[in-house]
Length: 263
Figure: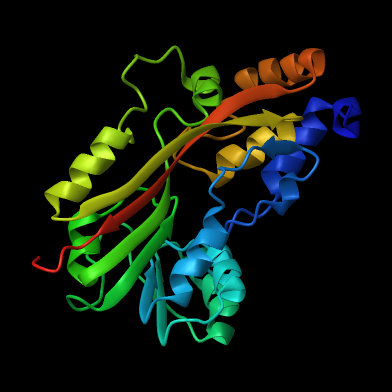
C-alpha cells in the first residue's frame, strides 16, 4: 500500500493544491496514480510521421513535451516544424523545450484561426486538443497532407467527474464520440484513414493525485477548487483509504485524416 494512505486528508490536499500545473509532464503522479496507455504508442508513431514530413505543425502543444519526445525519436526531422499553444505558462515552457530543436512556438488561442497560410504543412498533429478545429486543420494542410492525432474520447474519466458533479444526465460527456469526430473531419473535406478507440484503466492512490489532476485537466470539473468541493474530496479520501484506490477509465482515439488532392 502506498505510504500516502498514512497521511492526513489536509496534508494530502495541501500538497495536491501546491504542485505547479503548467505543461503536460505527468511524472509527479508516479506512485500516486497510474494510467494504462493506448496500444498504438502515439509519441513513437508520431516520430515516424515526422521523419517523412517536410513541414509539420503541432496544434495545442501544451508544454511541448510530446512533440519534443517525438522529434527526439524521429530518424530525421522536417525542414520546418512549428507548434501552437494558447496558455501563457505553456507557451513559455514549450518555447524553452522546443527552440533548441529548431521548432518555433506561436501563441494562438485554441479556438482561433491558425496563424498560417493555406496549405502550409504536409503534417498537422495534436495530442489531446480541447476541440479539434477541423476547418482550420484542413485549410493549413497541403493537398495530400495528413492530420495525425490522439484525441480524448467520450466520457473520459467519467467516474471521477460523476463523483464531483453527479448524478449527470446520460448524454453528458458524449461530444467526443468517434462518430462526431468522423463527421466533423468529413464536413471539413478530410478523409478519415484511421479512427481507433480504446478504453483504459486509471487508478488514483491518494487524494493529492485527484486534486492535482483536477487542477491540471481543468475541463473535467470546470469550477473546481478545494474549498468548493471539500466534502466530496473528503468522501473520496475515505473511499480510497477503504478500497486502496479509486478506479476510473479514460477513452482515447487515434485519428488519421488526409486532405484529398482535389480539395
